[in-house]
Amino acid sequence: MILVMGGAGYIGSHTVKYLLAHGQSCVVADNLSCGHREAVDERAGFMLADLADKDSLRKVFETYPIEAVIHFAAFTYVGESVRDPKKYYRNNVAGTLNLLDAMLEHDVKKIVFSSTCATYGEPLYTPIDEQHAQNPINPYGRTKLMIEQIFRDYAKAYGLKYIALRYFNAAGCSADGSIGESHDPETHLIPLVLQAIQGKRPDIKVFGTDYDTPDGTCIRDYIHVEDLAQAHWQAVQKLDDYSGYLNLGTGVGTSVMEIIKAAEKVSGKTCSVTLAARREGDPAKLFADNKKAKQVLNWNPVYTSVEDIVKTAWTWENNRRF
Ligand code: UDP
Image 1 (cartoon, helix red, strand yellow):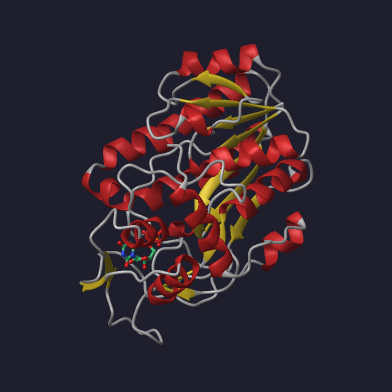
Image 2: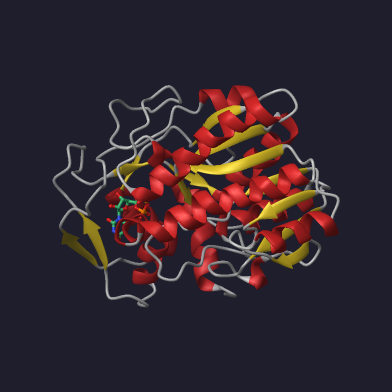
């Protein structure tokens, strides 16, 4: 059985759904501080647990025959991590140490972890491969890098088997519209654009139009959440013979303006756009070299067009349950 720590969150809940669809039994542990109970498939087990509370973690391992852990539980707002780093180091780093303690106490030595392209910091070149230097420019990115480094030491000392998946921009929602993205506050581009189109927000503010890119707006690599889910399952199955770090992106860069155009096309409506100043800490271009993940995991992202990704997000925005 797989423990999905943080399985009530955006990427975690889609991964639970994917695991169940592939015949894998799993239990979700989540403190529901950011996640949604409704997002957890009814066929999965559920326990309230908090990374800060070791006893709550131990209880999960005592209750279920866990063989491997997929660990999503983390705070993920870059801006908040700058304003309140102790919250991030305490939860993301110290909390993961608690989880690793509980795992080792129960002789569970396999973990797949949500890392991020934010561990690279300002890119020196694109596409970014796994060899790219890691110099994160905010506390959030640093918490994730620290955990990657902890894994390497735990592998040597305690035989931990780990795969850290460095996501680029997770996007889209379950193709059947049953679950989707719901953050409070929402800061991500695609849901904000769609909500502006729906009139739930006055406009979308484009953060920076003077970047060194063809249309002047930032370029990102949007990877569908179900393709991320697929990679997690493949990573779990690979842990016996591989530990390491893998980029998860499509390898294709899309600008902010291109996302807005895709959203207008999908919805058949126009989006009110306001040009705004750059957001601090946003590099001009981030996109992945994903060859290693494809090769190691035999992973192949299904969604290669942002329009198809936006379409799934649009379905969710029109029928959200949470
Ligand atoms: N962005 C924007 N307006 C918004 C939110 C985001 O222009 O209201 C831009 C942001 O500057 C970045 C891209 O959209 O270039 C994706 O941002 P998001 O916050 O979705 O993800 P991030 O790249 O920060 O992980």
